[in-house]
Length: 159
Image 1 (tube, one colour):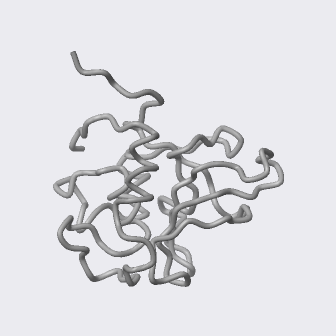
Image 2: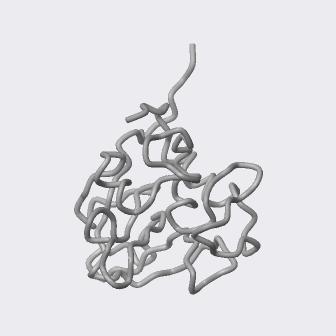
């Protein structure tokens, strides 16, 4: 696997908010967003948010929902451990069911109680196209929580 640079949680949220102009990008599993080269679907949007290299093995306009997990880019966490810049959705082999996988960027709990499950997310999903957009989303208990392997909580200072 290509080892990318670390990315901060703040940077992930900033890329989710400002990386693509809100509510202007049609959802497509086959089209590429120019000029950045990421696919215009949920996994492409999340790949852009994390600045996952387009040269990563298995990448075509970003990772897909299967190789995000199976290739080790993301790993499962408990929903109550979600922090800004983590993701929720269906990744890995389970994303091959009849609905297919999906993934959204978690920003925060709207009600400060993960057990009640109302999250503020950044997403680019087919049913809310054009996107991307920010949305309050009741937790879907078929979804799981994941953390990006190369995320850091604090800004890394250059010396």
